Length: 494
Image (cartoon, helix red, strand yellow):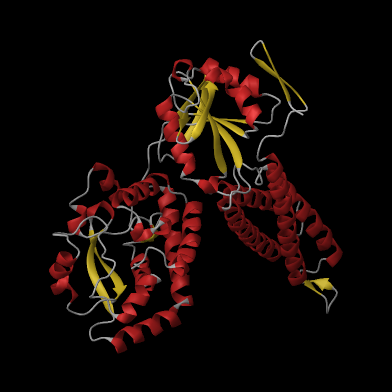
């Protein structure tokens, strides 16, 4: 049974209760560990079998199979150790955000880079084909396994399971905002179980957004232990001094409760943030967004190669859709419209035609029926009478957008980026929205996988700008994977 003694503003625990979330985190980490082991072993077995020719009793390069067997076992063990070292199963990164996938990716490429360097330096005869099979296959299996477990974890969290309690600290207004943000992100796995506010703001039996006030900020550590919280989150507040945070950290030592500090910086992602101490004072530097350079050359190369591969693979589907569009309504197969791209330059965006041939002449009537007198940002009526029967299906699953792969191939669009808009929409941009034009528009993007047309315009703009300023190639891969899911779900598309 937990005994908490208040003595000289410190906490002494005897048989302290485990923080809420500690038990589920251990169980969930064990499940992922088993899944990771299965994926890694399977990848190594496939690489070994492909590399080894059982009919001749030797490997293709002439090395004996037993040496590759030992290498496979050693590499599998090292791979699992690498995943543990980067803490890819930490409860603070699983279930939400790209951090978990990023750590799996980092552990994998660093391990195989180290193996390649060691093989070169020590003149070891390790077949490149062997590594070329093991690394990408294992990584794909690991990421797929993690994605499957994440879907399962989110379902559990939607049912109120596998969640951790968190205590929020700060001024009432800022604490209320943090509570609201956490409540709107159930997949993060946190449930706010209490609030601690400055001494003068404490009121008996008070609640903030339904969360009980447990006391003043001086009581935070004791309160977190009492309610079995897994973390304490300090919201940005001038009342929470560096000394108070340090004291809080000391009070939480040995309790297993995390201390989290929130920053008053919205939509600034990790790659742009660097923490550096100056005379023991931690300074956080925020890099300015960059919209040119080597990263963008790599992005363009990746876009072109990937778009070409996708076009070749789905070419039978493209031909089938083209035949259906042509056979079911009069007019051209493709619809070409002038859109505004990077740096405000205009280009012709291509889509499969999903509307009647005379759709443009009916625009005023459609606007009037919707109660609108002009086009607004991200305007798209739900029940547009101009859309054909085939076009409605194409739009529902975003198949009408597929010809934009040609725009990617000619360099006017990217696979991932903000959606290209017409002049009438761009004319409504404010300074924030104008930042969408600093990069190439995309066939898919952050707002498309976050609700598409169901999102309010301001939220869509916010997501696009966040992408523009914080994009990474790994993030693009995650958005593309989420796009496939969004297409099949057909939510927010009309």
